Amino acid sequence: MYYDLNVPIPDLSQSEGAFTSKKGKGKQQAASSTPAFNASQIAAVEARVDLLLVHKRVDQKNHVNTVEGLLSQLKKRPGIIYLKRLTIILDDDSEKGFGLTNANASLFTSYDLIGLVPLTQATFSLACLTHSMPSPLTAHIISLPLTLPRLSFYLKHTLIRTAIKNGAVFEISYVGALGGENDPILLNAGGAENGAGAKRNWWAASKELARVTKGKNLLISGGIVSEADLRAPRDVGNLITLLGLAQDVSQSSLTKKRLREGGETASATPTDEAASDSQKKRRKKIKGQLQG
View 1 (cartoon, rainbow, N blue to C red):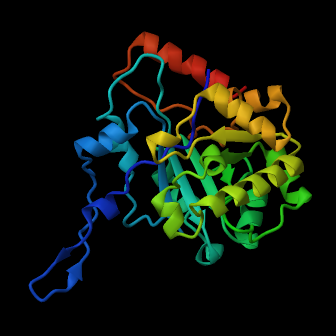
View 2 (view 1 turned 135 degrees about the vertical axis):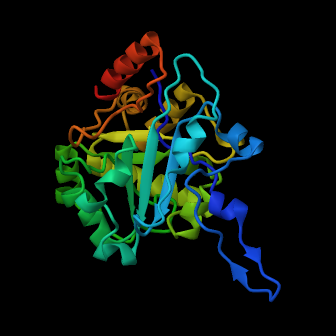
C-alpha cells in the first residue's frame, strides 16, 4: 500500500479575502465554524490525503478545523482512507509557545496526524526533544524547509537520534525535487521557495538529511499543489534513491512507516460512524500497515 501524507488543501482565508466598507477600510470576515468549499476547490483535492497548515501558533479562540467539513464533501472511494493532518509552522514568534499544550488538547483530538515545520534552531530543538515525546499531543512528523537557500539550524546528530528514538519521522516532500509549486501558506511564512534555485537547495538539504538520519524514519510525501507535479509511487521511489538511499529503504519510506501514537486520544485513521463493517475492517488493516 502506498500513501501520501502531505497534500495541501485550499486556504479559505485567501480565497474569501476581505470585504471593504463604504469608507474603503478593509474588514476581516469572522471565522465560520462550517467552512464552505466551492466545486473547483473540492475537485482539486479529490482522492488525495488532506493537510491543514497553521502559522506560528494554534489559537483556541479562532482555530477552525477546515478539513473536517471538506472530507464530507469528497467522493467515497473503495480502498482510499483520508487522514486529517494539522501542520504548525514554527518561527521566531513560536519559540514562546505555539498552542500545542494540554489546555488546547480538545482542539487536536479531531486530527489524526500532527506535523511541525521548524524554521529556527530553538523550534527545531523543541520539535526533536520535547514534542516528539509520547503523549496525547505527540508531533508525529517533523518537516524541514528543504527548499530554502540554507537551513537556519544545524542537523545535530543528538537531536536527530532523539527524535528517531521517540518515534518521530522526518518528512521529505518530493515537490521540491521537481522545482514544483509549493503551498502558498508555506511560501508566505518563509518556509519554502519556488523556482530553479529552490530545486538545487532541495537536493543539497535532502541529501544531508538522508545522511544524518542514515535513511531511518524518513517519510516521503508529495506536498503537491499543481497536478502537473504528481508522480507515480515507483517513480518517486526511484527519485529518492538519488539521495543515496538503497532501493528497499526508499520503497519503505513510501509504503511502511511506524507513526507512534501519543496516547488513547490519538488515532491513525479518522473515525466514521457511518462506515460499513467492511470499511472499518479495511481501516483497521491500513492502520496496522501505517504502524509497521
